[in-house]
Image (cartoon, rainbow, N blue to C red):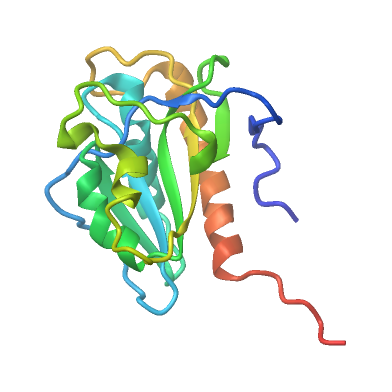
Length: 196
């Protein structure tokens, strides 16, 4: 049974222009709350600026995920907007789930699920804190395998100054967390095919 039956996920259609990522990665100063299993790493990144209302929804979603017992294979890392801080985690990950605000022109609170390649990278000032996941992946050592990366998020209503998400996004956050929890479980225990 699909653990995410209530998820109205917006997916890309061929030829459709990719949405932009509103924010990428801000340091929290530490990776407190991370759960490490180097044998089978699934990395979940909380991205965004929690000082800008819905821009911080990735951070809020990650904190909600921490309240649940995640699979042993999951590493939960609150990164924020400084993408460079994600590099050590990306070097060891085989699969990455990034949580962030995604502006695709849909109603606020709409759930989105994309691969990183489908998203259009953005940069505000070009500084290291605006580097983004696309740029950090280019900093992996030559020949290093690139992990599978998918981005889950919600359509923001406002990215104005404020510590709390808007009502529309706050109401949609539990559904996002449920969908991502289901995806982590799916990645942790992929269906096994019977031997013939």
